[in-house]
Amino acid sequence: MIDSDPRERRIEWAAASVTQGEILDAFARHCREELDDVEVLTTTPTRLDLAWRRERSSVELAGNLPVHFEWFLRDAYGVKVVASDAFTRGLVDRGIISLGFG
Image (tube, rainbow, N blue to C red; front, top):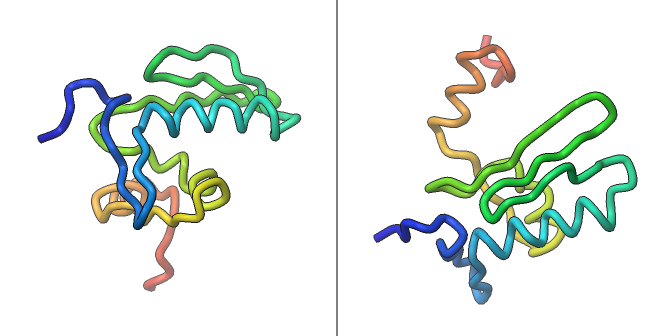
């Protein structure tokens, strides 16, 4: 059963167990403290709004862990998240990525 509060959803990796909320909070700290060219515009319990130069981006917790955290999770927690087939198919269908098959 998935918790109704996305912050409380647990993510299990080998011996580590954290909540999506803990990951979002850690990512916000990472952006503030480690990324000089990224500005944290606003934070809510389930959303993080960021700015980089003239670009704006939001990371919001939902039923699944957002893939925007992939590099952060790899560096901070030593884990690699694999994007779902549906997410990858959506990127291919929109022409954002090509898998190089023809």
